[in-house]
Length: 310
Image 1: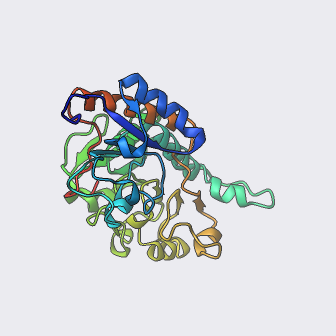
Image 2: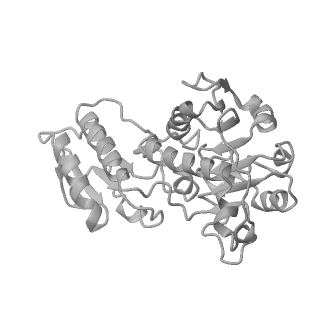
């Protein structure tokens, strides 16, 4: 992969905030890369959520772009990701951090913390438990698989759906897309961990929400577009499902006057599941590995597949 010629040095340019740049520079250096000005770089590390800002940095000499983001739906929809460069994303990098956050939201739903935190007077509630319940995990990649591992001590039954239907380690049952309706019918708790693609957008539609249990609680740490927001609001408001914990929403940011804010059994957090400081170490480890692989002409980790959309 390194450019041919007399100089086999891999030149890397990092776009990051001042506070984040230092640990990324160390990772590149540890792997054998050389930090360079943009005009001399064949590798671009983009540690930013700015989609539109990226395009001017893509000069003809840039052969590989490493995005820090795990989800690349916005980059694909915006036409930023092209087919003549190698693109890698942070797929699988943040699994442990985000799965822990997802578990916290599941447990909060079970403990009825959304209602308890809003209480202005003493009002004991009957808490639930994930132990012995069925947790449906839609999308068992890095995050979903780690969530299943974290759920093991609780004794929950886990149903895991993947696009391929492969066997998911630790899951009670592994299903393909054809098992979605069954998963929705049987799940007491539903965790959305799938990538946002044309196939998954609107996955939790009005019709599918209607198939869920009345006591079902939804957690979304993936992308807001996976859920029909209006249908979710109506189902919770009418008592057809119990509630939701949403770290991502559609629209996002969620307007201040949106009805989701007022529903007593709903938690909304501002897309913060991956914000723990541990993400820096996780991304630095991936960057170090990929730069070393690039230098050695080995396959990179987290390559973006335009056909699949992630």
